[in-house]
Length: 457
Image 1 (cartoon, one colour):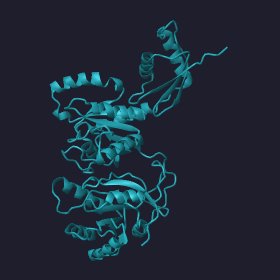
Image 2: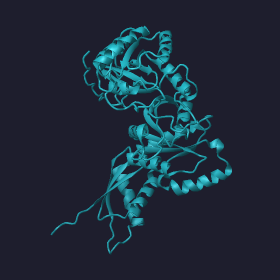
Image 3: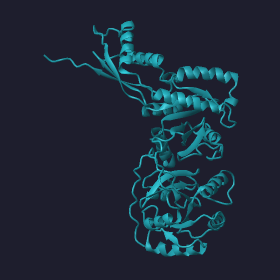
Image 4: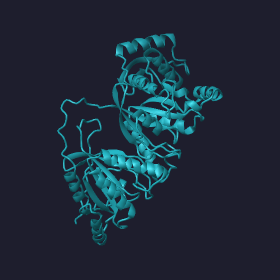
């Protein structure tokens, strides 16, 4: 068996209409290398990988391409038919993935051989009636390859020896995967470019992000447990709300600074930042019963730096009593002064109370994010503003705003041509008046100054 070629990165834009594609579920016991193999298939480090069992907990989808054919890969948590508690919920997600898939890639650790757990999973796979490709992983050399052929005894046909880590044998395995998957249907002509609006659900661990996603989706889509940090990979979910389809990205809770995080927490933090970058609106979920923390502030700053619209959802509102509401109002006035423009809603994700208020808040935030002010209208506004409230005199000089233009939307960015450098406080004053005049609900505003250079004689 020769080493498989390096797999190409799928460069297609996530907004590109690809049409419906077949689905491959990747299943197996914990820590057999499923996520590493998924990264090998999609050609980039997306799935969170660490050398301990149970890092992947939900079923997570990725776009893949091999030999010119597109398909979707669904990574799953470790499948243990005898599992209890959280492990049982993870196994249930794997079972759901098999039901939804067109074919299954069953990953076995060739260095361990057939276990009772593998044999039990085989029975479930046979009952599903789905075509199965057997991947004998961790085959890094010729000696292990010989051991891999003992997996014929599983009765699933030929085992494909692969090394997810090094790429050995991955090409032959993927050829078998394509043979098992149905042909890709023809692409839909005339599909609207851009796709569903993208919403990232962000927040500290255990504030109810996954519960909110499950309530919106109407199914147990994401593993929910009282243990903090249950979600590690970002999970995309297309959900129909208010007559429109939205793409929700559930993310791992940002627990600590990326520099001080270790192992899979480090990669989960990177994935969360990536999810915010991919999104158009971030929904910050906050536990209404707890004080706003430095972590909440850091997430808000990440969203602002990324130039994304923001909605703040105070969750677990059924546990917030009158006294807590009083202190929460003080915290909001003190800590959220920089994002007073963000729509705020109070919800209880567990019961679904007021979750329907999310869509109007998202609509407002998106409308603000994409608001454009005409150059004539903007300069009339700036002219009145400067006349009524001129810049303070500093060291005998008084800079003025000469002209302004909106360079872009999403987020709105304005360029101010000035006679000198404006004070930061005056810049904030201009931003505040822009919001009063034109709205810009739910979006950061970027102001750039272009002071006029003095001519040299």
